[in-house]
Image (cartoon, rainbow, N blue to C red; front, side, top):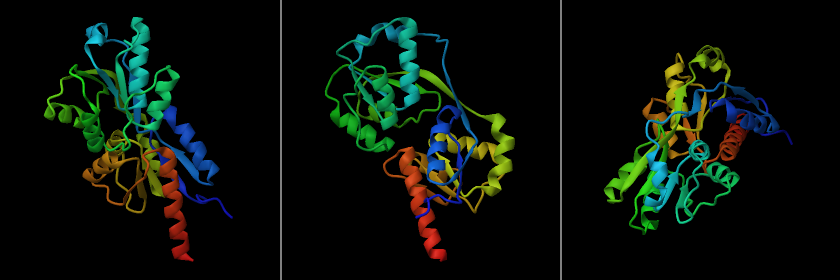
Length: 255
């Protein structure tokens, strides 16, 4: 039996540090990965105000919605030589986020069953029982859903921005060189979809777009991308499984 992605060219748009792992999985499945990072992640080195770290005991929860958020937050704590209070609970979103958290020696008290921003926010609010505020660890392009939902529920919160996402402008030339030759284009965050639309000279109609979750799919459709599929669960492995399924169905239909 042939490999499920044989003959398929798959564009990987996630940041360079994470692209190689996904590309390796594409190769194992028989596909041809094309790595063109759309975004760059920079962990902030300078902060105008780190006073929030000196009063972590004022919070009941710290909520982190990405692996980058975990990295940025704990790098900052180490730099400031600050330890998390034992009573401070941690909420996270996503398997990769949880893996990174474990590497720092911590376990999450809240991990939502769904990674959809709306459902995740509602699940956390129903789980929340304490009177202290929540500390949200974020990037500069993080979605507003969770803060908005906390505000609606009258749960006090503060935010701490620990990383910056920027468009990878140096990828523009390569992106436009390979666009016509790829079969599938993957988006692992709303930011990758936004950057793609900014850097691409056109949106290929003959490619199939695979998104990691509903929030990313919504952003892609909002940007005018129509042939969109979303994986379940919201992981890179599930995205590749979905591509394999679609590719197999198309091969059967063409036989």
